[in-house]
Image (tube, rainbow, N blue to C red; front, side, top):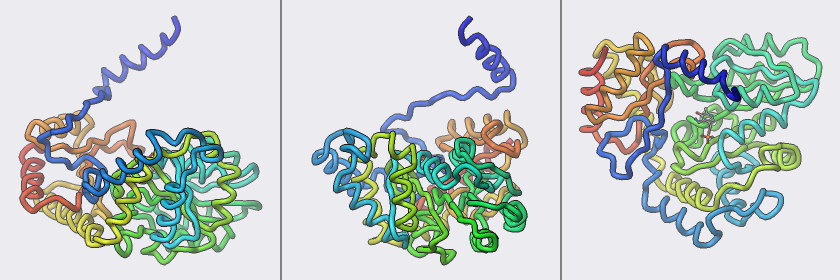
Length: 375
Ligand code: PMP
């Protein structure tokens, strides 16, 4: 029978208690949200919503074509200029998602005969970029510049190291200065995915590479998403103009994908301008994360000290993690639950996201619910 083999997979998933289901969210949910990636609380900000609406009124509901045909509007160009300028890079290129931006950066910068050194904790989109690229991939130990240097040594030909700047599971930061030093020793480039750093780290949220003094470096390429701190949808690659020009000509997820929807571009641009005007939002998201971690640790719960807005709390088992998240939900708190197979190390966790707009009372309530529902 066609697709018969998937029934066996479904059976195994059910037996392991690892079935994933979609839970459509109501517009007026009463849940306290510590699960979304809306770190700065901008997704529903009136200026961001109006930015989306105005863009849709001006440019329509869709981009109407791929970027090289009809899908590049003046709005896309404006967003690219402002993103590059904000993060301190020469140029930027906007994609329909952060996932597509990562596939583009890795595949286009790792030709046949090249080497990719990829951190063991990288996001799935970087991993898929490595799988699609023509170059050979070596996995380096997590957050270990020496391991990256060792993997790069002896290779003859183009090479890149790829790493998240803030790892999406535990919220720990990559040692960017060490990574770039290892790359420079071997003439390799660094591709850094700042999905969780933009809007939270660096001066006024300019991102982890900016904080590490790497903005504008000619051997560093940064990918970002517009879907987290900027409260919109889409992604971008930032870097030297010659790299961006190369992507326009060589990156398949740029060339063969419809351009980012104007509403998403308009929302991201409005959010970026808000962030420039209200830079304190960035520091507040980080401070909320550290407060959550400190208070949960005081309750005897275990987790990695957060470097940005992602806070992880260990659960004893996948089943207990799922139960814990469900109990939080029943008590009015929405939290993320990360468990195998989504986590490479097999450790199950609650994943909380700190938001700049959480009030003191909301933080109190979140800590209380997580403590009271612990397994
Ligand atoms: N990189 C990282 C580290 C992420 O966490 C995500 C989103 N989960 C992405 C890339 C993909 O971004 P997008 O959702 O915009 O496709």
